[in-house]
Image (cartoon, rainbow, N blue to C red; front, side, top):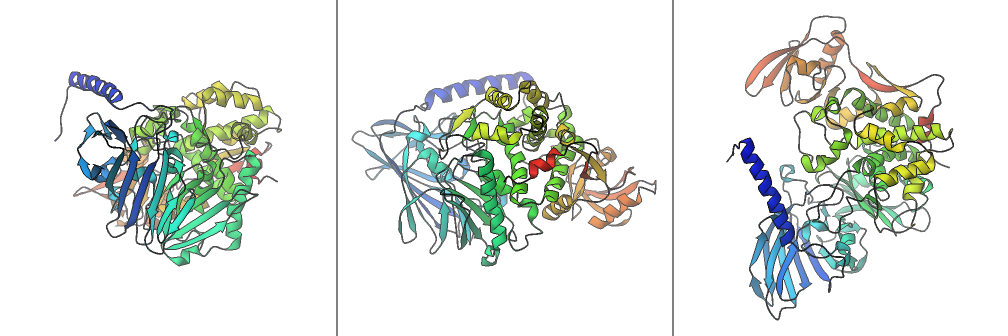
Length: 632
């Protein structure tokens, strides 16, 4: 049912929503920094692979009166209220074998209230987490060969306490014979049931588990602190990693240590799934990270390089995002709303260092890194018309506004541009630090000063905008507040770091290795800077550049190109047509299917194929190459 409301009615609804929020706050106990009286026992049965069901049983100490239990809503790393409460089913509460009635909070669907009777001291909670059966239902986390257990999906916890004040004793039962990896330490293993050492709830939530039939572990330790690469695969052949490939992953750990001078874990586990079956992921944690890649990650090393910045990105988050975290993200539990105002540091600087560390470790070559940077620079030079109406800072609201849902015109609406737009800001900051210090200081000095303290600690250390500015000033004095705000608030372009680093963005008709890699992985033709659109290999129209040639001709996303200049559509056919139109002044004719209609659209474009690359500026200092060099 769709309701159409007048502006006045909408205003009333908004006022009521505000009232509802106030009532919700009063009905759910606010978290307090006091010890939880006892230990929450959590047991998960993850053996139902066919139906992809996680069965949950919890036991917790209680006292008579009303108890509020919360299902995690604000998930660290998701930056949004994305807890999957819709997949919880079969919820029951029991005391001494007697089933209790429960009620969901009217204004907070993540809160459950139950009346504990006199004489009760222990509550049993049971439910099922019905994990997605298909991508249309969410990320698939259980397959015949592997699974991904995230504790926030399988836990209700008591309201009224900071998450770091709630001890949890967790266990999981896995399919017979499966291996597993997690940052949580094993206490005992009985058959296929693993009992973990007691952890505080915030640490357990931050310690997800990968398990699977086909598994191999590689040691990446540098020094005394263990660092492991745990690889799970759909098939055993994907685990065939060469020593030189593993050496580059170990070099990643070494290069991080050289830059930061400290780390924030007692051990670290990369969890890497090489799969086409389990849903893709890249999610950071303090002592681990959840990652996925192509089944050919190792076996077709030269072809799959485009995704190898993922591990550098997520590993960097152990410092940036987990240890140091924007103050408005450092919430006391998982149901207090987060603020995302500093994601241009959390994610933007991590995106920046993901590229830098991919290069320094050798996971990417210098040329691959430069080509990838050219793609990002082109995006913010010509591919984001939405920045004309919306500043980069405002995109930090996107995790809540859009929650990564598909968009009709992403380039105009924008979507989480604090990642790559933030990356451009930090590239320019590096160039400015080098300029101000006459080459003696760089972004590395900021990284060490801001993140390189409290070695081994994984206690969150929040920060605010003023601390970012003061730390930059400690490296090289400048009006850093204005520098950052000019770029975040849309008063200065985001691409200044390219030329400030001794390079310029150029376009020609030869696609770079990064463009080719992106087209192969995405199965599309990248015509963004020529026709102004991306087209799937099957002819489906993807993002159409706002006010670009295709847009002006009337083409929109979700149409399908059937023919090009009278010939059947193919990737080569449309590229050939763009090339021919450079000398032939007739417009390019596309036969397009729109719903059940076929129409011809004419694109009057004659600029030829256009792909970005970087070119040296003669007579300038090449600080970009210096940035990408491995540290000795």
